[in-house]
Image (cartoon, rainbow, N blue to C red; front, side, top):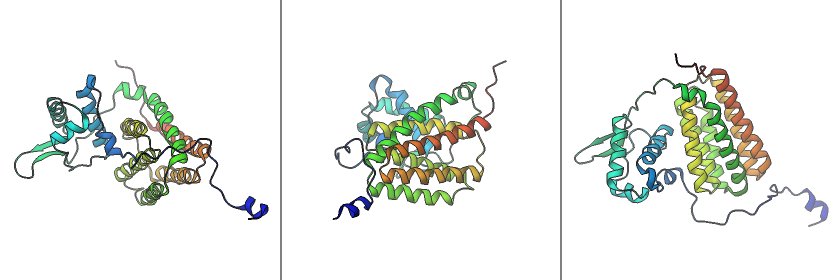
Length: 265
């Protein structure tokens, strides 16, 4: 190949770091949900883990949970601890248990309606956004470095699907969560998949408090397209830039639409 032709050949953006070594199949969001919990807070963490997965739609309404023995093995907890967590989630209306043939523990359908926002939630929303920024920008950089084309193809399909959900926020939000968690899966970091799931859970609580005009969702999905294009090019700096712009957009909307945190009387 001549020097001139070699110079004109398109190249993937040069990486500053070597790609992650292959580790088999990338971790999935449900694998992160059912990963082992910390023994000191096993009950509380199990409630949080399952509750967040339900809230994000990773465990949709009507889903049957794995058998208790399997859950105990995956989470590395005692059966008594698991049963306490399942009872707590059933009492809150998030799970239901049935007996007999075909019985088991299922995600409740419908889910309980959200309660009014607490003062603490409204006062701390910027901290939630800061944590999300730290997690998601890192995810974007690592995904640009490590993502496989087949994983990005699936995310591109989600972006196309989101275009048809602009008037159905519940459907849009579930697909939006799948996209962000999917990007974390593309980073091939199990810890970041868990961190992304937790960040999205915290954001869902805030996002549920505001209106969602189709114009805002359309703009957000256009940002998704630019972000995925940068990741596909392997351009880490552009991916970080696009993700930052995307998250800042959400923060601006929250700042404008969230009710004020009024002091207790």
